[in-house]
Structure formats: C-alpha cells, structure tokens
Length: 137
Length: 140
Image (cartoon, rainbow over all chains, first blue to last red; front, side):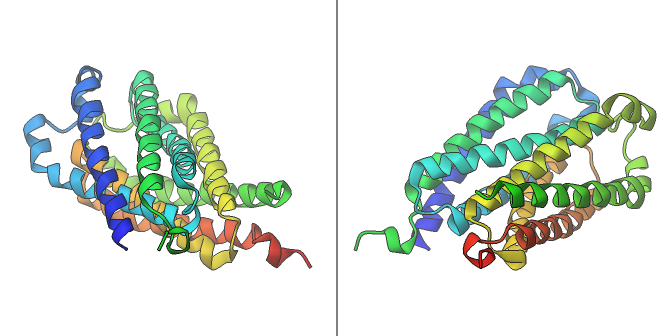
C-alpha cells in the first residue's frame, strides 16, 4: 500500500507537470487556431479542479492496472503497459477526431505527447511499485 | 500468447463495442449532442461521408490493444476481464473529466459518458476474459 501511494504520487506529479508543459505551453498556439472548440481561459480556470481530479483518476487507474497484472516486471513492464495503454488511447482519440472538428495535426501532436507521457509514467510506476513477494525483507 | 484465442476475443469485443457505441452515441445520446454549442461536433453528413472510417479504425485500434493488455496478464476469466474493463473505463473517465474542463460540454454528457463507459468496458472486458482464459484453465 505504501509503495502504491508512492508510485501514485510520483506519477501524478509528473503527469501534472507534463500536462501543463504540453497543453499549456507547447500546444498553446495550436489550440488557439480552433477557439470555438474550447472554453475561454477564464471559464477554464473555474473548471481547473476537474483537470486535477481527471489526472488523479488516470494515474490511479494506471497504477491499479499495473499492480493487477504487470507488477514485478519493473521499469520495462511499466513502459510496456504505458505504450499499450497509449496506443489504445490513440484509438479513442481517433474516434473523437471523427466526430469533433479538430485539425489533424492536433491528433498527431496529442498522440506523440501522450506516448511520451505514458512511457515516463510507466517507467515511474514500474520503478517504484513492487509486489509484496518481490520486495526484499 | 494464444493468438487464435486472442483474435477471437478481439473480434467478439470489437463487434460488441461497435454495436454498443452505435446505440449509445448514435441513438440514446443523439438529442443530447444536438443541444451542445454549434460547431463543437461535426455535422452528421460530414461525419458519415469523410470521417466514419476514422471512428471504425479508432475502435479497431482501441479494442486490439485493450485485448492485448488483458492477454499480457495471461487472461483470467470473465470476472477478471470485467474488473480490468472497469479500471480502463476509470482511466477513460479521467480523460473525460479533463475534456469536460476544457471543452464546452455539459454535465449531462459527462455523466452519460461515465456511466456508459463503465457498462461498455465491463462487458467488453468480460467478453475478452471469457474467451481469452488462462492457458492452465483452458488446456485439459
């Protein structure tokens, strides 16, 4: 449980900082090209807590999936899970692209950013979380 | 990995996801989506003519890797598959919460996505789990 919480906390801090860097700075100009798809800056601030809860839920589910079937494999297993989950997420993103008028380049940038995010999240979780039997006494 | 069972599980789960999403998004939520701010969704005609293949391709990619992750566990039956599906739905709902924060969506859409996602992926996980069982329990 202690390692679960440590893995969750470390991965959450990374996800928050990466999300801020990717979406708040790197992709800012791309988002600005489609203003009708987004809430206004001031409106978004009022919804900021939903972003924090959403990120927490993503990290919690990631660590739970890792602990359920990948634990013990270390960093490599964590990275593998991160890659598999992100490719599944790219599938979901393609579905969103089909129904919402996003520019194609946003789909590509978000998928590259998501892949980097999930690889590092997986590495963090794999490095910290160890199943009980694999721990040294 | 048992590739034969993997592909049977993948195809069965894909058929379920395709039908579920058609009923859920195409019929049940049709009016809810129509009430969203104009320009947020593609017009129906544009979607059907130019983007429907992206939706199907996206579902294929999602289900393929959803099945692959479960198979990487080594399988485990319908109950284990349903538990796994619920965890993936929670992850997806986290992404939905972020979408809700940045897009002008309504709480009604968010609520339906959360409930629908859990039902959809719990059943898809149960299908995958029922077909792709642990090799020790499937071999005589």
